Length: 83
Image (tube, rainbow, N blue to C red):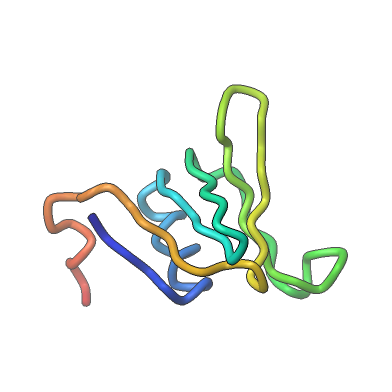
């Protein structure tokens, strides 16, 4: 398992690998497939967020100011390439 505790790094990793789980400060876990990322400048409220496809037709957003950590399935060392 790969763990990221910095929001933007977690979003980059999520974009590369497509699947993961994001944990928020209220104890919630949102897991699924990558759907979208909005930077601070793109987001209507000025807070970066990642959209996660949790089930067919269901998308949940995790905002940077609520983010605690993200976990990702083991990629067999592929995530270490280029570091």
